[in-house]
Length: 242
Image (cartoon, rainbow, N blue to C red; front, side, top):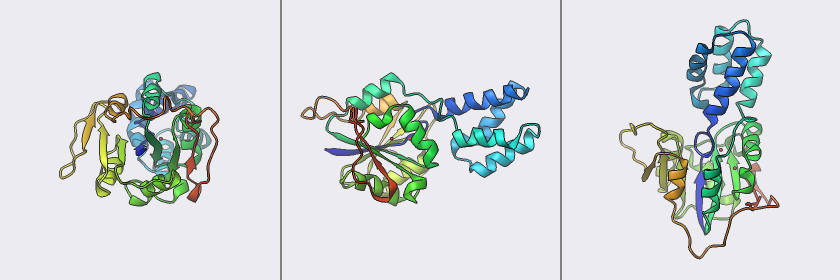
């Protein structure tokens, strides 16, 4: 078995689409122009802008919106709206011979909700969320924690993600094979290159060599959890993360 680590937001799932939908609903509920949605998305920065900064920006721009409504939007972050595309689920099931762990920055409640709501908890072997692990990508510690929860080393491991800094730089620092998900962008980080570039998550998963001698499938119907260090989460993989 080999270790494959995958980012959650805008990698396995389209986090921005879910947040856009939730933000659009908030604007409509308070009679605000739909054209403001582009500003909200820019302020959110794909989830990378600190939550407090986004809250302050939204409160300042939309003084008529109750702070509690803004908090609800940011607390949920679209977690109740994310979906897992069937072709992504199929790509994960194809990865026999690989141990798959989601490695994601973010708040534990929100990220875990995305993993469970989409059924990813039944398709991967575990997940590590930065808030629980006490470390964030691109720091080496969070990748090491991902390997530890499934009892593996990082030797020969792969990392898939959409963030040049968090995912690809983190992988490069550890000598891991990396796949950058372009999502319509061009690579523009001087001095740093991913091992592979894929247009989207399905193309990224197709780059992972299949193990012809592996088991027939990866789904973990029971979702049983194993012993877990540092509040990281092994899962079952349909043997029921982001």
